[in-house]
Length: 546
Ligand code: SF4
Ligand code: SF4
Ligand SMILES: [Zn+2]
Image 1 (cartoon, rainbow, N blue to C red):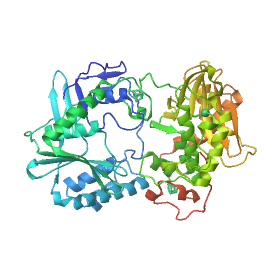
Image 2 (tube, protein in one colour; image 1 turned 135 degrees about the vertical axis):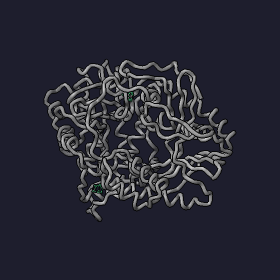
Image 3 (cartoon, rainbow, N blue to C red; image 1 turned 45 degrees about the vertical axis):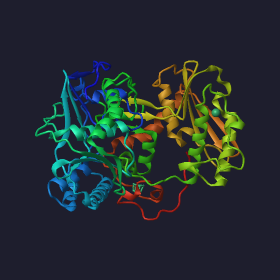
Image 4 (tube, rainbow, N blue to C red; image 1 turned 30 degrees about the horizontal axis):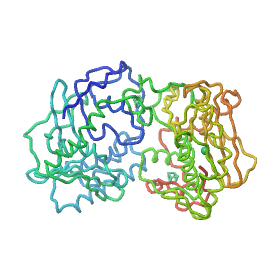
């Protein structure tokens, strides 16, 4: 289980001791945009930031599964009924948002029912963690936070991983850690301090069989990830686990993204640009939060919706046909813009006439697909690669992160396309609409992400030269396209952009309660299932644009 750790060097913004290396299935993170440097630091629990952020904690619980795990612990290890465990959740600190509480109740009951259905196996829940430990100059530990079960006598050990919605598949590296720990782990309580080692006790009990199962809390359905003998588990670790652990521990270049907000390197990490005032707010002491323009829009529509979406509660498909078509058009163009050599998009690259070219989640009716084809054909005249001689670098669906040190916000920006021309960044947003051309309201008002684009470019937050940078807004309609250019160095545009951002970000930043604001929009709300305040039947509003 020991691996070479030489590739990673403690950066100067971390202090403490790196003699303890601890890896669990979640250390590497399987989510999008995970940063290798984040994972390597996380795998060294004895390190902490040289400069800590002394910001208050949020008033509401932000860890979606934490309360569910607590409640299952009460049922499995303290003999409480589900009702008793839920009563505790209702009065705990930090408090749960009412929508989070609804979800936690659903999740607990679903899980308890799923375990009862599984009685034939006669597994019992195991309270201590299983920890595999070894020393070779450093102390190496592997563990898993997942739920643990075993048969009488310990012949079978089983891990159950809870998923917010439906069970999906874990990465082989994650499964490998769990099966290794199930075979070799000894019992241990959770360490008193995270920086201290686990203290395994009792004999090593080698099971004959090991299982890893995911359970989806939306429906309680299990999905087996591994089921084999101890020998098969060891072979599985050798094949998938070793490389995974080595990768996590060795780390790599920091890649800013969603994981910055809970990264212990955040205060010092040189990969994150710091720009006070990006959101137009004055300096304050408040919990650090991450935010995208979509988050701000959800909050403006209904704070509860914004909060419940950020918890990643299971969502229903809220996309109307216009939004689905917009996504399909975006996807088609993005694929074209990823082609090597960056050829300009041509009419021949667009879907053939009379064919429904949309697919999967973004499938629309034949009629809408024909409308989408018309929009795509109008992209040909607006394609940024028509005059590609000046283009040095292209990033379709780029991701940029900036720390607004005044608003205490990790701002996540996702331009549709970012390209560099003559050392300056061009930020392009693509919009689709079925409406005919009409006198547009100010684009910065209509699309707040364009206000963010203007502000980030104006402040040089993406690097490069602010002079010469621009925001391009391409609007595709069935009967034509418009290309608007915005100069981020224009003081009037800068003022407008800041005032738009401030209008969204001000109420979002102040909000600690995330109250529901029911209305007709509830019927398009993807988290209405969890919301106790959902309006029963709102009148139909528009379907929105993308
Ligand atoms: S702060 Fe962000 S970029 Fe830096 S190491 Fe952490 S996750 Fe990576
Ligand atoms: S259902 Fe309505 S009130 Fe509830 S979160 Fe969604 S939009 Fe808000
Ligand atoms: Zn193009």
